Every structure is written in C-alpha cells, then in structure tokens.
Image (cartoon, rainbow, N blue to C red):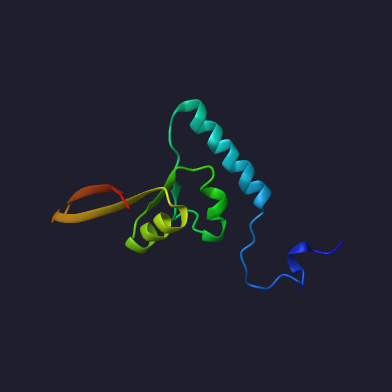
Length: 108
C-alpha cells in the first residue's frame, strides 16, 4: 500500500480540503443555528481558505476579522455580516494592564 500523502500528482506544498467533510461540518453548524437561534460567523484567523467561501457562505452568517484586509476579504468574498475585532493593551503601571476590546460591525 502506498502512502496517499506521497502522491506525485499532488503538488507540494499545497492545501487540501475534503469538501464533503467541510460541508458536513457546515451542515452541523447550520443545524445549531436553526435549533438555538444563534448566528455563527467564520473566524478568518482560524480558517481563511477563501477558495471555499462559496460553500461556507451558504451556511454561515458572515465573518469576523482582526485586521482591515481580513475584514475586506470577508465582506467581499462572503458578502454577509463582516465583524472586526481588535484588542488594545496599554501599560498603566509596571504591574497593571488596561485592556480595551472593540468589536464593530461593518456595513456595505
């Protein structure tokens, strides 16, 4: 038996996505949304394979990003809600930190 990971027909390096498994996970997320009333959005830091976004946008409600260009990618490629997240930490005193959290919703 040969190792499928050593298939010479697959270029290296490359990203491989098993679309059937991705869609099964997306269907599960859609079910969670329907049964709970929540909206699930894609975290682009965790999964930014934009070649799958045509499939992803059929199931999820939008995306969230921590950078301007990620937010733009989500808005342009998914075309739904686009959220931006930023965390700012300021040093007040040598042992104390001030943390501010910003979450914004982008509109067209």
